[in-house]
Image (tube, rainbow, N blue to C red; front, side):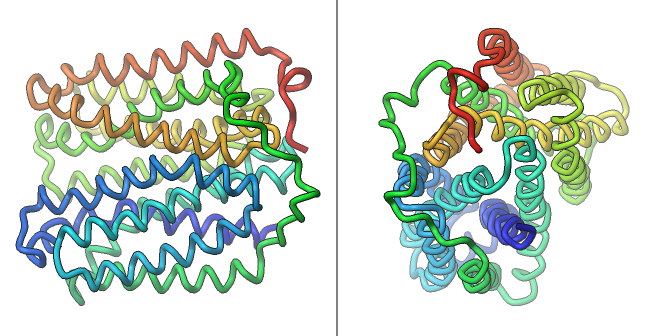
Length: 391
């Protein structure tokens, strides 16, 4: 089991690195394609769009044909994306090819966490998901730094070729380690999508899109807040983000213990959301010394590191045989929420500073937390009766 969890953690680490490594590469990519950094940023948008659109279909496919049959081709698709981008003759072609990477990630993330749900008993799922999520944390933290080093040393193609090589290596290891899929006749059939769109699943899915989308949007704007309020330059802002990544890793590792201490993922999620609101609110609204902002970033990471696995475990317990579809639908909603929130939050920040953006970002987190508090009251005991458990 440890080998399987390690392979899954490395797979989501690859996704985190691929998704965030463009941050230090926009200027070199713009120079390579004779474009502006703003135009090169469309590589990020294309990836996110493909991810959001494809995730529900990839999750549904994994529920129908098995996790291994989706995860292995997704790793090959990720390798193809890395190699193909280095051969793109124009930025427009590169943007089109970037869709391949979004498709691969749309299959890898929900497929990996659905496999955890298949293999790990319910009482240990939050801890196991936290360990796998630690891979994503590592990719988010290390991807941009390594991409910057490789780009300076060998040019913009080097990071893409490196991720392609890692994907191929992971494919070889995963092929040997991942368990074979059960025959189709041994797998419980996934219910139609319309049967999944019930309140017990819609509430946590929509709430997560709100609180997670707001938290990530605020994080993406945190560098600008630090620059405007405390005079941080790019290097200092990058170092501050490292504190968030450290907190995120600590939260991932603590998620299982918090779940056990509080009696289940619902309570763990509420506690994490309370900490998240306090940390984001302190960062956006407290005009105190930089040390306060840095402490808030670290606690922000801890809160998200606990909230994401707890939310995943909660959804798994309610999804029944459609766990892949439900987790993938959640990924899609999260990305859609982020794409809608970012322009509005950025405009508010530019117009009135952090205090102007805070009501939107904190309001969505408050709504998400309130929805989950009501959800816990409405569904107390439902995971042991009306809603099917995972084994």
